[in-house]
Image (tube, rainbow, N blue to C red):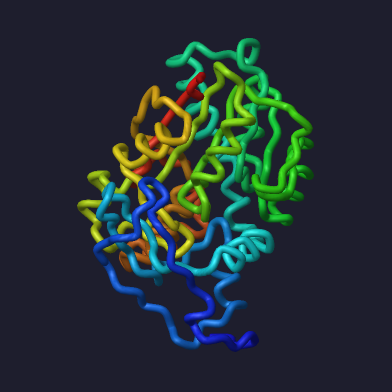
Length: 317
């Protein structure tokens, strides 16, 4: 590995408390497997928004609430630097399938919660990556603002869709007093170094009858239990592994009331899914290569690998 910035590993990691209950006591579920030669530059490369880097960090379970999370973990400033500099053309190439997923998901939420672009017109998508959700929501008639830490991804989204996509993180964003009817965190909250701080900011940005929509890798899912250590969401970029109980508590203690939690299904090209799966099961690598230049590999498949969707409202004091 590169060692352009030579620092002892201890200078690159930090101890954290549980964000749900604030306790520091925990049980180690999995020891770290850091390379002692890791540099800050190498870690910044790992922490890209769509990184496939398998879990290097220690995995622990909180004694207070049962949340599973990384502790100690890479320092927050290194993580943010990695996200700001992320470039991932392969991720962007799957935008069309993601737009289909988000369109279906948003239509379902609209139906179940009686919302329309007329009753809830203004949407903020935090961590919008290449702009797939803003595009889907815009096509359905919503007025959308996207926020994305990766400068490259935000630029790609603006160029492709001509939408209001801003480069930056929630802590530094300035919406000039504007509030939103819907705020979404698609595949984002597990990446956030400070989810409590983010929820407190979201509280100020969400209108009184607005909805907060989050999807996340569900540690209690059947898929995780079956696959064990081969669960594809065990990644160094995922700092927290919520389940419905810990997610509900996190939201309730930070000013939100949960309306529903359900399985989240998504669509991606079969070839892309097989390529991602080949990191865990070598047989899928054979099929991935077989379909590389085949039209079948471009066929969108619907799947759930243990993700859950939660819809919540802001509590009114």
